[in-house]
Length: 304
Length: 332
Image 1: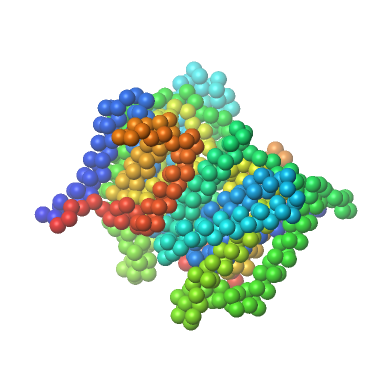
Image 2 (image 1 turned 90 degrees about the vertical axis):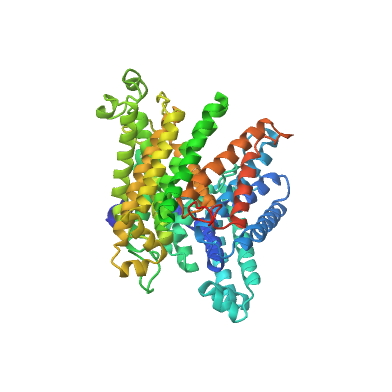
C-alpha cells in the first residue's frame, strides 16, 4: 500500500503537501487556542484571515512592512472585538448555540466585506505588493515556491515560540490550567478575562500571519477568502483531537498534508473527487479514533 | 383534562401556524407568494433536521445531504421524457428513460433520503459530540462532491432545470403539515421517548436498557426521510436547482433557524423557521424600499449584515432560543 502510494507521489507533491500542512497547522493553533479556554469552535476564524487579506490588498501601495503591520493591527483588533461583543456574552452557552452564533458573525463579516469590496464595482481585490514571494525556486529539480519555505519556517518558529510561552511563562501556565479545567483554575486565582483575552489575542496574531501567507499564495482576495481553508482546518482539528493544542495542531497539519498527497496521487481526471476521498478518510478516522487521531493514552472514548 | 389538552396543543399550535402561512400565501400578490411558500418549505426542512438533532442532542451538519439527494431524485425523475434525453444525455439509462408523477416523485425523494440516512447512520451513529458533528459534515462534503461531479446520476455542476413547479400553496402547506405531524408522532412514540431520555442522560438511559445507537439510528433515518421529502418540495417549488443551493449556506441557515427557535422542541423548529424566513423576506423587500409606517430603504447588500447581527443578538439575549426549547403550552 505505502509503496504504491510513494511510487506515484513525487518530491514535488511532498513539498507542496508540507507547505499546505504548515499553513493549516498555524490556523489549527489559532482555533485550538480559543477552543482550549472557551470551549468554543470559532467558525468565524476564517473571516479574521479574510479581513487581514483585504487589509493587505487595500494597502498594497504601502511599503510591505507597513502593510503587514496594518494587517496585524486590523486582525487583532477584530479578534478582540469579536471576543468582547460575542464570546463574552455567550460564555457558558451550549456548544451548538456558540457555533451558530459564530456562523452568524461569519456571514455578517462576509456581507460587510462584500459591501466594502463592491465600492469599486468589481468583486475581489488583488494584493500585489507581496506577490513576488510566490515565485518558485528550484531545489534538486523540485519547484518550491519561496512562500512555501517561508510558511514552513514561520510555522516552525511560531509554534516553537508558542511552546515556550505556554511552558515557561505564568500566563502560559494559566492558559494551560484554564484549558484543562476552567472552574478549578478560576478557584485557584486565574483571572478568566485575562486568560481568554490573551488566547484571543494570540489567535488573532496567528490569523494575521496566516492571512499574509495565504495572500501571497492567492493574491486574489474575495469575501469568501479562507472560508474553505477554515472549514477544512476545523475538520482537521477535530480529527487530530481538539482537546489538546498539540493534537489539534497535528490534525491541522495532517489534513493539509493528506490533501496535498492525495491530490498528487489521484489520476488527473479524478482529482475532482478529491473532497470525497479526503472526507471519506475523515469519516473512517473518526469512527476508529473518535477522540482524535493523535489522542493517545486517554480515558475511555465517548462512543455508543 | 390537561393530559389530553397539552399534547393536542403541541401539535395544533405549529399546525395552525403552518396553515396560517399557507392561507396567507393565497391572499398576497403573486410576487410575494414565493416568500410564504419558501417559509413553508423551510419549516419542512428545519423540522426534518429537528427530528434528529432536537431529539438526540447530537449535532449534525449532514442533514442537508438528504435534502439534496431528495431534491435531485425528485427533480430528475419528473423532467418530461421528451426534454430529458436532450438536457441530461449522460444519465444512466434507467434514470434517463423513465419519469414519474409529482406525488410519486415526493415518495421517491422520501425513500431515497431515508435509505441514504440509514446506510450512513449505521456506522456514524456510534459517534457523539464534535466527532459526530464533523463526521456528518464529512457526509455532506462527500454527497455534494459526488452530486456535483458524477454526471451519470445528475446534472453535475450545471443547473437542473425544467422541473415541473408543482409545489403550490396547497402542496407546500400539506407537505409542511405532514412533516410536522410525522415529527410529532415520532417524538411522542416509544422510540422518540427513549431517544430523548438518552439525550438528557445517556448513562441513565443505557442503565434502563435503552440502546442508544439503535434509537439514534431510527431518528437519523426518519429525519433523513423527512429531509428527502422536504428536498422534493424544494425542487418542485424552485423549478431549477444546483448542488450549491443545497450545500453550506442552506445548512447554516436551517441550523440557525432551529437554534434560534429552540433546539429541543418541535414548536421551536417551526417558530424558528417562520421567524427567520419572515425576517429574511422583510430584509429583501427593505433593500428594494418598503413602507412600514415610515418608509424604510436599506442600502443594497446590507440584508445579510442585518440578518447575521439579529441572529447573533437573539442568541446572546436568549441562548435557549425564542421558545426556550419548550413545546407550546398555555400558562395555567
